[in-house]
Image (cartoon, rainbow, N blue to C red; front, side, top):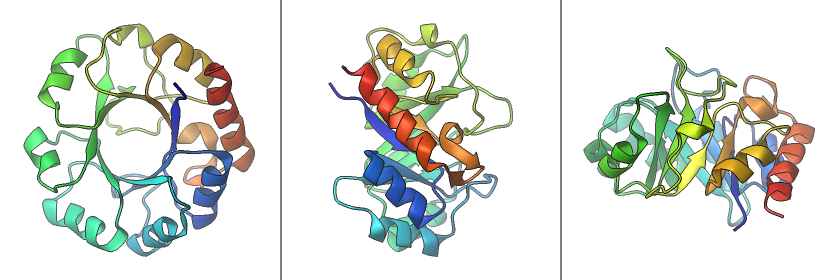
Length: 207
């Protein structure tokens, strides 16, 4: 199985196209005011409109108000929602769209129980726990905390980059990997060479 790749924190049309042409399966657009990778609705819509077929635009939220999520859905037209806060399953399901749910992994978090709680999610995104942060920190977590038999498609995030993505895929065998800071020149601005190297690393792991 080829591991899918999501490039998150896209803020420019050119970066989205670079990711798509390098082989990314999805791009992430962040709609959280606390993020340095926040993207305005008009630019996000231009990104979505520019994407070629079979590249999924994902809208990311952190404890957003329902009207804000609905506004993004109407204006930007993403194909998948991603919730990174303390949203309940009922909240995630209320928009009649497929969604993935992020969980911050650390010792003591029961990932199997979390997966059962969000059983309607298309997948769970496992990210590093960093106090006060909602992702994009460049921090990894102990992959040994992930159960071998996982009931939902698993998306691995947290501190991935071109030098560790192949090892991460071989050890965890996720459905997809998600990267943001690991392919950036500066926060919110992607680096074409790092994107290409990251995707090569993911593909090499699948050989």
